[in-house]
Image 1 (cartoon, helix red, strand yellow):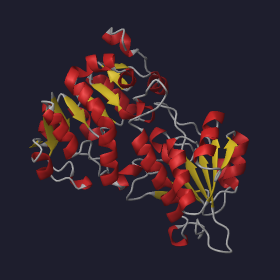
Image 2: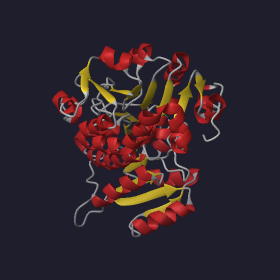
Image 3: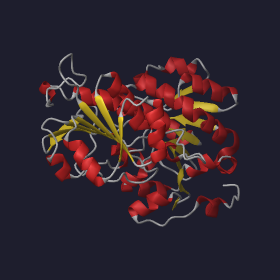
Length: 374
């Protein structure tokens, strides 16, 4: 199969979808790997590194036109819509519930669009979202500590405190992978940490693995309101796979927060957990609403592309190999997790939460492919 690796053109995105090591693995399986010129530069992988393992360096037109399977990191943006076509499989992060124009462009093109973030195992794990969730959670705690500094508009508080001075308070809404990793870094900085979570089983697990070093509270509207009012940093870490994030932090809650507190909304790709959240970039990462600094960068892991690119390839490569070896139809028949990742196929929306978000018709993938194994 001809596998293309496109260069990311979304602002401040430095990751690439495949490392040279991954390209070599695919080449050894007999596949032809096409890498757009300069695609890996932001992650410190030059064109020569890909050529050394047998990949072909091609132009942007060639990588989109010649590939049968196209790998990206972020969703296509408007200038790329015209390159979508019905005989192409696109494998990337899509976050379609928060992006109706892209959803409609994918449907109209007839492309097969597989989203990393909705590949879901039978036990509800999200194996391709997990590595970037780990990175984003850790970055969120760092960003919160940084933007608390007074010259940056923050309260002027050292998150970890010093001897004789109390540390800052970090409230994490959501105890999944993002929330856990945010808590780990916040604890490492010396902060007081509270995690709000709705699953008792998850709270028991967090209590065990964090050795009782955090406060674990059942999440409710009242508890969120009370907790954020005393927080120096709030980290939004709630995820509903494939769907819009719930708006858990209202504007009125923000008015009750401390002046110069920081809100890091990691769920911004799915619309964000706060009513006041809107996407930002690494070039302009923050803005203030109701006296609270909002950090809502939509591609947080892009700030550390070397780490992120390697972690992403580690997770995606087995699924890329499966599609390349067998074609998408047989691949989804073999792997139910991958089948759940198919968001759009042959002009139909095949992920129910996305169809609901945009008022579009939902068509189960098995109805199109007629594969009982899906």
